[in-house]
Image (cartoon, one colour):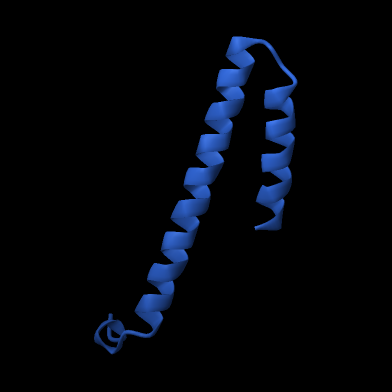
Length: 60
């Protein structure tokens, strides 16, 4: 997930270079949201792969 590495870097740069509490909170929430999306994508990819290799579910 190279695109996410870039956005994580940019958000971290913004986070460290601002003193405004509201902006820092928003940036932190964006970072958390992106991490959660990455985790869910990884989980769904694993579920898809597991379904592909499971003979029990081939007939569905």
